[in-house]
Structures are given as structure tokens and as C-alpha cells.
Image (cartoon, rainbow, N blue to C red; front, side, top):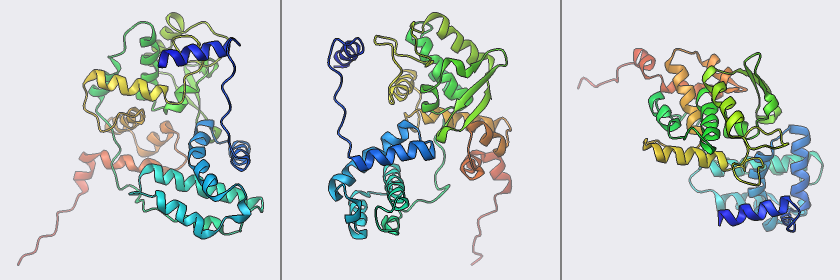
Length: 314
């Protein structure tokens, strides 16, 4: 099935097959996505995630925001809220932003966003999911030193050593690397750009991929598909690379997602003595509150300040 899909993509890229039909997106959702892109700098991957929740919302409540009611909005969310999972949190966020956009354009009731119920979510209630440095090295070592293995190894190192997100790696351009200065330009969420140091290990891996495995292409995107058509990787491709590497390594991990490497990089920085502000700078967090969750994995420091549990003398 995957081979047939790639063949069809190749034929479409060479104008030998009709283009893929555009999915039908309601106008009100398309306008919201365009507004978010222009005024908030929201990345396309994020908008695609929002669209996944907005399409059933518009299908159920209609394409005319003036007809939306607080009761209908609340019932839509409550029918789909199961256990306060991360997907429910994303749905609530997407709906609230969608309604606020409509309110700003005077297309629905001014207080309709308040109808979106809050889903229970306690900050810092969970630990970051990570593995130790030795396990990270075992995961990276599963990549062959040839062909697609060179590409995959370079991508894994970028996430494991520089704590990049999968989206950061997927959208990286060749021109983002300043070889002379040893710096890497990363454009993250909301279009914010940052310069990170390019370590020798990561730089060597990226250079080896460019010299020996990257297909010839006019695209400036750094990481390309290994087989034709040599286009940019899809949204889920890097997550698949991480998942397969973990399974090959035999390492037991709390999750198979690409974010595991980012969390592991932050935990290792803390273990090596980096401060929370320093970790936040590398992770490019806009707020120190986001980075604060990593303080919970420093068990040695926490043990030094932990108070004894009160015991009744009776």
C-alpha cells in the first residue's frame, strides 16, 4: 500500500496522474486557519491538528456562526471529553481559539467562548517521559551508516542532543545551518527563530547525510524522502523513524513518540548541572513555567530538601 501511494505521488509530481483532490474544508474553518497563519504565525502542522477538531464541530453545528448557542457548544465538548486526555485539551483549545476569532470579527455572540467547558488539567501533575543517556545512545545506534540510515541518525541526533521538536527537524532548511559559525537556526512555534550551537557530533552527522545520502533536489528542505518522489517528509514521518528505532533497540521506554528524545535531552542537561533557565533557553520555552516540570526529575536535589512525613505519636 505504501509503495502504491509513493508511486502515485511520483506520477502526480511529474504531471502523469491527476492531482489529489482537495479535501472539502468549510469556508468558516478555512478563514480561521488563514487568520491564525497571518496574525498568530501558527504553523501548518498545528493548523492541521486544529482542523481535525473543527471539521466535526462545524458539521454538527453548521457553517453559520450566528446560529451557534452556548448549549450546543458545551454539549459538543462534553460528548467528546473522555478522561481529560491531551487530545481533549487540544480540542478545547482549538474550539476556544476558533470562537474567539469569530467574536473578534463580530460573527457570533461576544461571550460564546466562555461556553467551552474547562477540562481538568493540573500543571506539573505528571513527570516528563524520558530515558537515560545510555538508552538514547542505543536508540541512535540502530541507524545504519548508509542510505536512509544516515538521514535518520542525523534527525535523531538533532532531537536527542539539541532537544528539537519533530516539526523543527522536518521543516529545517539547508540554509539554516551556518557551518562557519557552527550555529543552527531553528524556527519554532509561532515563527519564533533562535540560534543553537551545532555540536561536532550533530554537525558531522548532518554533513555525512548531505554528502552521501541526500537525494539531488532543488528543494531547500534539509531532510527529504529517500525514495522518489524526493519531497519533504510528511508530518508523521519523523515520529515513525523514532518509533522504529526504539523498537529495534529493545529499550523499554514510557512512550514511542518523538518527544521522548526532547524530554530525555532536557533531563540529561539537568543531570549534568544545567539550571532551569539554561534548559528553558535550549528548549526555547517562552515561559519558565513550562520548563519547571523538569525540576521534578532531579531526585537527588529534591531528596535534600524533602521533609519527613509526619507520623502520629499515638
